[in-house]
Image 1 (cartoon, rainbow, N blue to C red):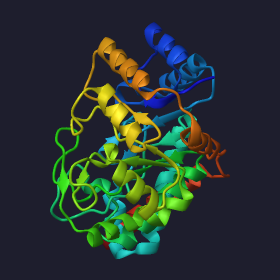
Image 2: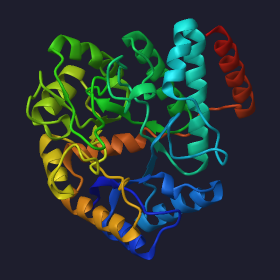
Image 3: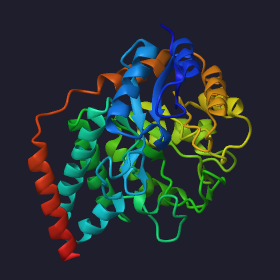
Image 4: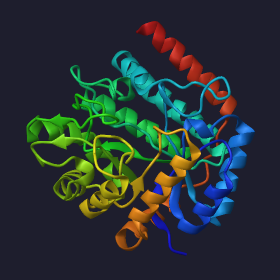
Length: 347
């Protein structure tokens, strides 16, 4: 079976007939659920099973569930988890407790995903937070120091992994210094190489142990003054693959963001030519199901077949979605609440 080198979304809480045919015929490697597709527990369980049935395989179902303001699973139907920045603030007062809380929070969040048939999460956000930057990252980052972000992202990733969820570290090589929101504009970062290498050290620390990473639509003038990372052969080969040392599956950030410009097909072709393995497209700006399907088809056609080293990386990512480790959820919730309460009192 030939797979398309892309991850696409669906338009709502249930598969349409046309979407079922698209999944069967185009065979995107993965599918990502947006908020429009997450209404209730039973509904999401049915949807993920329908997606896998349409594909005819146990594909990875992704979601963007970081906690805080980036959460496709909303309260009160699902628990509300803290933003990464909350753990970062607590880390300043009590590092060991903050790391334990971060692990437990992501272990519990991962358990919610696993119950729904979701096996991959576009998290954690490993960007180093800056004092003067756009709030597009903001409290999605775990902190302002390399030590804090490294320890907390490692805890977050391990928590997800123990729950049977494969994390996607983002946004390589580091979006923390971007002064514009890539949903709407193309940021350009003028920091020197030494500064950028420090920002990237978080990704470097994780590189050998994570199977999936995501690019950012940001120009780093010290690496490539003309092209954003997602479509820059230089940044992907020299910085992500060599300087960071990441050899796992590299997916684009959402191709629907306006930072890249041009048609979706053009964006996708440039990203693959630059060295991305898989195209990610969420149709996050659209509500009309026909328009969403049209974009899905355009991206899948641009993606072409998943093959070679990209296919090997995709298979390795699938293989890393292990069964959950033994876990007492009730006790974990109690300990998580205890840690959060005690640390908030210290802060």
